[in-house]
Length: 109
Image 1 (spheres, helix red, strand yellow):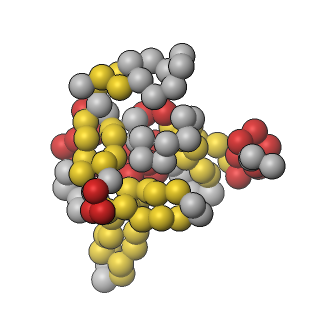
Image 2: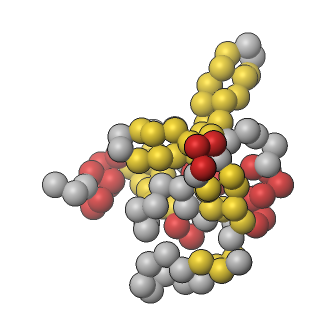
């Protein structure tokens, strides 16, 4: 399936990952085998819905977000969605930026 989300945004093949509450997350087909290992659900944060999963490591429960996993975002940085669709986790839609860059270029104030 091909999806175009914004004028000028390229057509790319996508894979759909169903989430709870009827939401669907989009990702690259090459990421599907890795992402299918987790149970993804929709979680609202700061007014947007994100694909999240609970992970237990060393007896501690933590949360991962699909877009940070796909973009391989290091600690202290932000994975920004270029088309402002927080459930679109395709590689070409994600950009790793610092908190300063995100506030400078992507704030809506």
